[in-house]
Image 1 (spheres, rainbow, N blue to C red):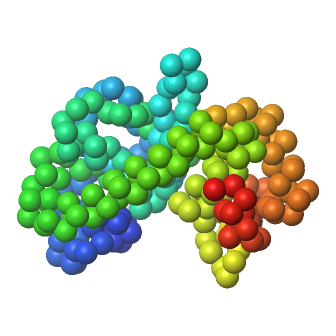
Image 2 (tube, rainbow, N blue to C red):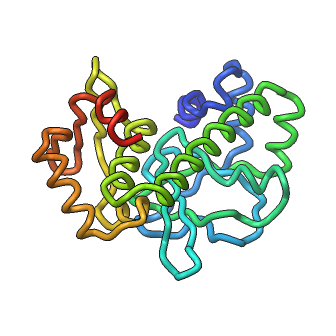
Length: 225
């Protein structure tokens, strides 16, 4: 099971079966119950985490004590890599959104893997660049857009990260809870409700429980990107 997971991790995608097996042998599996804190911002970091199953949120605390959610990761995602590279403290906290299981890879083992397999370092650089671009987009949304724009931009980010595309339609299987959406978009739960009602009334989204469909994704992006 762990080997099939490693194949889903972008930074390991160029490796062969023997190399996957080598990494699997270096990893330790650990379970975290829902709402359990996995990492705390500013703690020392000496390991990287690969999500085997479940979902986690990556967050920081603002100066006024509010939680700001940077991203939500699921199976195949990874976190904790920055501390492995620079040896500094964790840059964010990570919390399990549901019962989750992760594979833990120690810093020394990871650095040796990058030394032996330069394609891992290239893959990591690409992933870090993508995350920086995503963060820049989120910062721009929070600082320049109104509440409608911030919530809609958050939906776009979720669609890009977790959406399933079919022709011009994008379906997000499970959007975060309202409070988590509020923390991602810098708004309130009440604002999330109002914006979602407007988007539904305008036929810009279709909601079914926690599933959200954006019928015309290109139009939606043009309106709110």
